[in-house]
Image 1 (cartoon, rainbow, N blue to C red):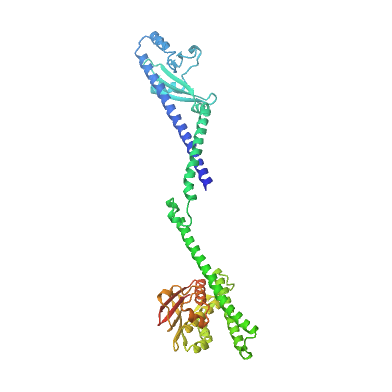
Image 2 (cartoon, helix red, strand yellow; image 1 turned 60 degrees about the vertical axis):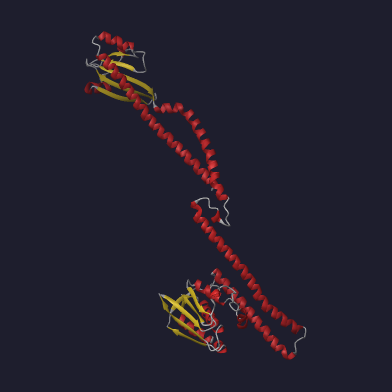
Length: 440
């Protein structure tokens, strides 16, 4: 960035310099030419008025001769037939007839004429002004100068020196200005960028960096919590399995109690396998690496299947489970949506009162499929409602242990809904029940 700013500033300064030289060249060309023409015209008019005031020809000649060495202008006097009768520089007796010269012809016709001629071979420019006198002779004044191009060529070494000095100053200033521009950016505190914004134009970028920092910190916090929770959740069943196995190994278990201990080991192992499977599922959902194409899924049929599979679980908890609605089809991953139904319904059953109810309804709402799972269970207090979809978060940890939950069920539900670009909302009142709505 620093090099780019420095390079662009130098190019800009160089371009401005070239443009300025070009403009000055044409401006000088115009002004110089205009002033020279005016000078020749004034000289010619002045001399013409002086000659018209002298009546004797010999006196006129003497007067013109007296002006020969005064000033830079060339005086040429032309008779009515075009014969040159006087010239202040050349031998006028040897000069050609000037009747066909453009300035002379125009002076005969209009009384005065101005002509500029440029010599490409000599790099010279001649300014002529001819004026018709009262005796019908023509007085022509002229001045020859180097062309502006030749003048610029002669001044080229000086101009190049000035340009080099100017570019040197520009390089120094560009370096200092670049340093002044870049230094505040290099000194930015990217941890808290909003506290050190040097330029208004950087505010959108710094706001984005702040959001990314907050998101990174949030993700890092979630990662640490996830790691700690996973370690704890894995350690609990492993400790139980190790303890039971050690008792059996040391012969401290009566033969009649071995099946009881074996059953406990089996349950803890099953819980451990379920936890590992849930962790794998949620990790794949995080990375959106499901590996299965979406297909048409009938939500009504799926609700019927899930409710049928959970009948025995509902009976064990003395909870009635039913569903209603109409066939609604969505594009989705069959296994994932089945997991969504199962987790929502299982939670509604396990966190319910004996004699409670769970109702599942399927319908359409604003061109989207709507799933509602409503229960009359223990409900969720306000302070916990925003966190129930977090991984390993449990409202009632003792109850969760008793029901064998891993704390990942609702987190998986949330990720499934997000994978299908859906929306999930929760309404709950402690002691009265919970209503979860999913739009797909």
